Length: 311
Image (tube, rainbow, N blue to C red; front, side):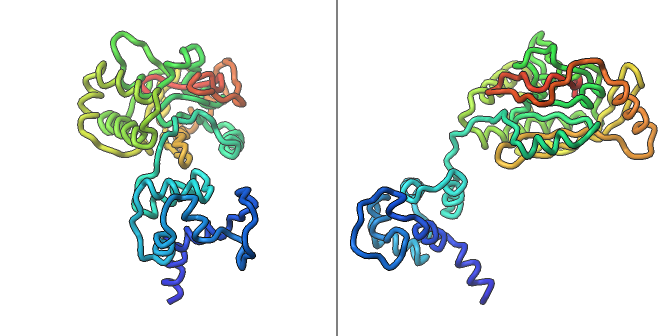
């Protein structure tokens, strides 16, 4: 019974009621009316603001109406002054896809930046949802080379992996081989398809997909397969010019709704690869390192410090 009560309390009707009861007329700048027994909005007030009947609000809150239309849900979200996260939650509870007019973010949240800056010498880079490179640290630059000479708009992992025409797009300066090229290629393409569902109106992402589907047959073939997934891990070998080949594990962490991809390169502990990795990081590259700068709106001028070729 306790579990059932908790489930009911988290349902669509109970959530709408909780949001209604937390709103005060003064917060909505409504004129004072008759005396109230509760601080929140009355059902009739919510109904009026949302443009629905009071009976429908009652049926929603009582769980007798469970499938409101997208138009009604949008109206309720506005009337209840919901945040974007709450609005999306309301849509999902109603069995609807949340409205999505967001663009691919290039901003790294402060909490993520704190973690990145405390990782020490670990080689790390951050990519936007469309695999646009937006940040890298000195460790990344030391291990795979500094891409700061590459025009910001061309610092894109997908464009490097699937070149178009005579473009020489490189975010990695040293040669890099992948353990399973076919699986890695499919992961990148399917990850972009996932991003296109998350950010369907983003112009930069749409243009990237247009360029790759029309200009690279391999990408077009994989894109036509319709697979949706995310790029999470891989194995690579970096041909470092000073220490020789370094085998690394490439793990990709994703930051919530922003879909930022945090790419971390590490070597297996106790191996010769770990020794070479440490030597590469210690040697550095003598290039700039500006790990406190974000790109803005796709400008690509993130941190001036690091990455790889055929990455």
